[in-house]
Length: 267
Image (cartoon, rainbow, N blue to C red; front, side, top):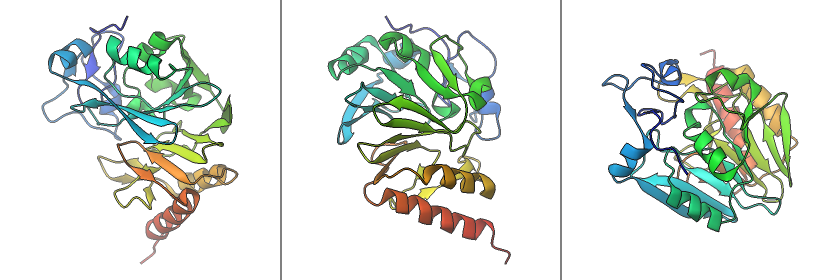
């Protein structure tokens, strides 16, 4: 049974364990407090306002899970229907008992992994609904808004989830910013750690998207080094249809080259 009454930040969509006056995730320089000041909602209020789940195929064995109308930042999660067990990549805010039933009809969720704190959403409700661990990089431990034993903190550069699925600590956007590689699908799931932009043959690298703070060049170079051993054609971004469909690895390389060329231009 989904708990519907806990407070959720209206701006970032992250659920907290108890009422509080502030949202530290939004007060950080990578995000922002809404122009009307800190505002809160709950799953019950979202349901009463007419929000419902949106479930659509986003690619081969990849199902998008979002909300209509959208909430907070507007991202969608992705259910990877892997033979070793379904993995939910990234997170959305809205969840109710009907959505849980629909996801169970798709095979449920064996594990959850989330790219960075702006997308933590209602991750503990999802973890409890499906009895699934949530994999978060140790470097982002301080940002977990609702601590719970379901959260598995990992350290280092990579973490195998089994079945050809590997988490990679790219470190872009947040120190614990992670992407997920699916070997058998030749796909990289990047959230907005590597942001698939409107020209979907490219990706971007930013420390803050809403405040337009570029990522440090050394961080981008490190991410490229970590991604080098992994082959992928598709790059799935954080929003509906934000997908690089072909030559994904080349798209990441040349996007980084372009980024570094502008970032290091001495005029």
